Image (cartoon, rainbow, N blue to C red; front, side):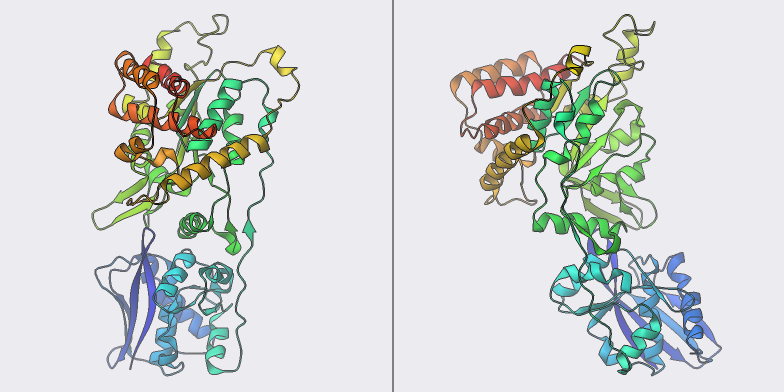
Amino acid sequence: MQAKIKTVAFQGLDVREVDVQVMMASGLPAFTIVGLADKSVAESKERVRAALTSLGVGLPPKRITINLAPADLPKEGAHYDLPIALGVLAAMGILPADELDDYYVMGELSLDGSCNPVSGVLPAAVAAVAEDRNIICPEASGPEAAWAGELEVLAPPSLLALINHFKGTQVLTPPAHGDILDEVLSLKLEDIKGQETAKRALEVAAAGGHNLLMTGPPGSGKSMLASRLPGLLPPLDAAEALEVNMISSIAGEMKEGRLSRRRPFSDPHHSASVAAMVGGGRGAKPGEVSLAHLGVLFLDELPEFNRQVLESLRQPVESGKAVVARANLHVTYPARMQLVAAMNPCRCGHLDDASLACARAPKCAMEYRSRISGPMLDRIDIHVDVPAVSAANLTLPPPTDTTEMVAARVFRAREIQRERYKDIDHATPIRTNADAEGEILEQFVDFDTPARHLLQDAIGKLKLSARGYHRVLRVARTLADLEASEAVSRSHIAEALEYRRRLAMGG
């Protein structure tokens, strides 16, 4: 007796089809799972056995072999429970095997036969649509699968309910898709008193998707500024929302099938490991850089992060991809995030105030800054000082520029960029000026003679690298877009250079 059920395995966001092949043959009673299965899959036989027993179905005294094909593809996770159980039931003749051919099946089983939610249902459902198949998943994961579009979703609360559905004694109601989360964040830019230069830098960073580093003493408002950046960014469009939520689904963070149109904001603690930041660990799960895809990755107290962690960010920041390489696994996650970092000027934080600075200033400042490598700093487009807020600034009335006004300017600038790059044939979509590279960028930076001369002088004086040169062009292009200017003028180049000057001065 044989049966075959279709399920999936994940390699990053790529969905690979897996055949669950079940054979019952004469011989000593045994239940064996083969096909490069990890511990969680190998334990599936005990959960399946207990679930079937709870339904009053005893396994026959035969040699039961489960093969997960292709055999050289690593299989991880508990979502193989349900396809294995259905394969066994089909091999026993309890379920019609031909009716299961059109489905991808995934789900974890409890010992009483109920179905528990699993991660990765959204990308599996999208893959099912592409292969003209349907999907069977736990009831709690049904709203997530329903977002995939035109496919039949069977979302049983238990194995018994699914058996009754195929036997015609019960009808499973198709699940409705989950809610859409797109509410406006309550944090307002006008809550911050003073810091007009930093606010301007934040607006420019938001408009062009640029990386930003804020340096200032404790309590100057660096974290407040960063937390208000998501409120300035436009919501995700349909294609972007699908990308972001598929990553959340793989990470198991898409709760109750709720689809988010908010740009993600990730702020890991400085004790985070390389695997937590870039991805890896068991199952090569996405890291913080991928969970922040098309959103913001905020690193507070930047020098306090482990040096190895910071160096691991170089490649994702530059390429927009996080590559997890293992001996038997090689996966790539998208990581086109906007890096925003904050740091104190020195360990005590009061380098510019002699009355508060420690006895080791300014030597301690050089040691503190040296924790961040030059190549990493070179990948940050905008460097801005955030000085201490004076008592006079705290008593000022709210600024005239509200969050809504700044967000509107950011939206207009991003629409200009979207229109500019929409027809560019590139391996990855170019959405903002920060994504544009080399010839593509220079094609759209048309500056006059004074601007060109200023930039040529600055290359030598500031000792700009080729990367630094192109990052100045990107920021200047964004400054022009904020003014809806087709040409990049000398003032745009000058402001963009000012954001690099602090890096060139070593701080």
